Image (cartoon, rainbow, N blue to C red; front, side):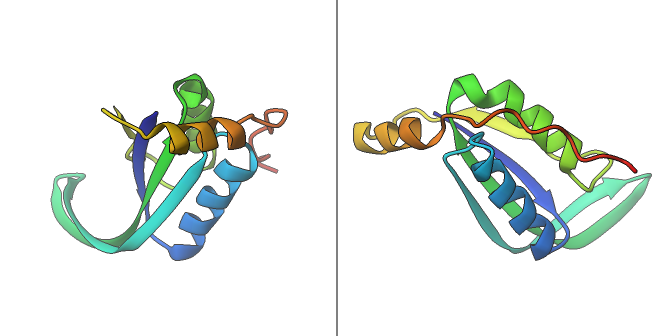
Length: 113
């Protein structure tokens, strides 16, 4: 199993991405936390902003499609996308994830019209 993180500025964007990824079958589960305080440098300035962190749980075979899906729908120009491999996942949870992550036909990205 893989885990990935991203952040967004609003709870509405967090819910939209979380629900959409699960509905598309690209993630077994997405947890939303926040707000969290993010401290970072952007365009040469130190910034602090409240954000909502999303934790995606998904199977390795979903990795490319999930990243493409997120990049096409994320509201940020440069979204955080960090993926790590889980060292251990219980067999029962992994079986559940496999059963819920069979993707539906891959949805097209939102139109820019």
